[in-house]
Image 1 (tube, one colour):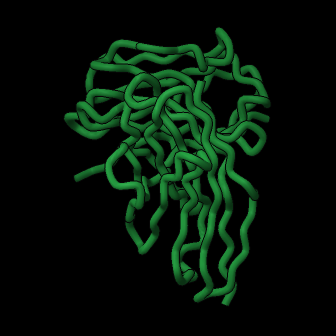
Image 2 (image 1 turned 135 degrees about the vertical axis):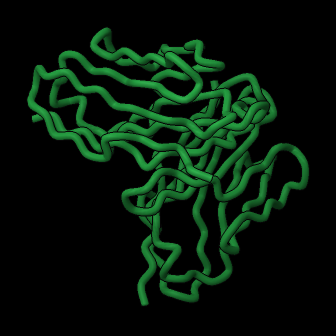
Length: 116
Length: 113
């Protein structure tokens, strides 16, 4: 089975540009999570969805960040405008129905974002 | 609110030596506890989990962890390290289904020949 698929794997952009990160969860998974990983702050949960509906976006750092899940097989995380402090690895993860809160998350390989 | 503390950002062992990675948790209710492993340039993979059944939990690749409520600990061990175990390890906690995962800062395991 294909795992969680994220694109792009690497993105280098200039400050002020719009960045869109994409995620395809594992088919049949009903929860989708976006995490950010930095050296300073470790892994932070940004937002998560259940059945395509955003449940908790309290981790989204600013209004410059937005996330959507238009259908069960696709989600985007958008940063507009981007800033150097947004440089990080962004992970998408999904979970099997009934296990979202028992920690069994399946992670993608991440999107490494560098904002110059 | 739940939290985890991982002692030591880096742990170095020789191949064949015991691996011990420490994790202490804080939770207002009985927790679920997890260890994840991250290899370079990859996402996190679940290594093992504790969900209130047996206190000694066995995971993949020969790792195990013991839940000790009195010490609020969930340390990860492996009797004999392999070079392939070199990775970053994350402890995580959730409040038994009432919240999402909270991750520790991670411990990088270095294995020397």
